[in-house]
Image (cartoon, one colour):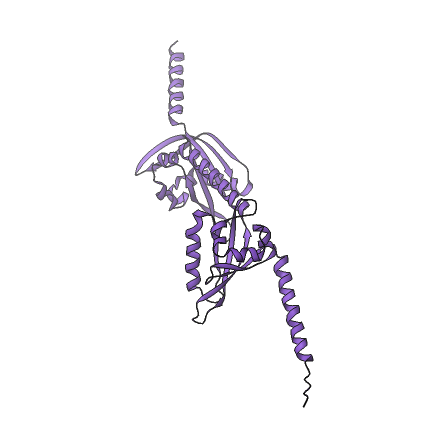
Length: 294
């Protein structure tokens, strides 16, 4: 007896599967990201897309053949603890949970490149433990270099500002619901400003400018600072006389002040010239006295 079976439907399913696999492979090979699958049990990469092969200048079969040695060859020695932490996260990761990390790998040219990784559990074993990890990565070396340069620049700036003799501070505008500036918050004050104000950095950062120094409104400085922020015009004040109370004791000082707009706030540098003004006034009085008796 001969049985004829229609396999048309089976062929159609196989063709649809083949086309789907081809479509997925095209996406994997054209993405600019590195794409890989890491097998925790075998401790090796079992899949690498074209971008990953280009990055390491190794074919997928070569990467897989290296086994666990591949990671040891390309992973930066200082980042081994990061890799160990990543593996710990795999053990507790839930389905769909994305694990992110930044780590250095050696590329085909022997350069250490920073990669940002996004990884998820791709498959689990019979016990429900993470077995294969699907990951994608982008090269962020340039961003890391810029961050390092920025950090170095900020450190140089902070060191210079902290050690300068002039007072320096950065304020941000505090606005009401109508958008009007009602006060300024301290964002930064250097050591000279703390000494000049006879206040610690913490005391200044915790309060508003006019809350801490209400005489700024009476002296007109608050309005001047508002104009700097709203109009963007720098402020220059020479020999400005400021009167206030410090710990219940009145004082009168003279300052040279410079202020410029910085975002929705301003940066201010000022110099206490009280002693110089006192010397100038004493000299003027002496000259007037001499002129009067001659």
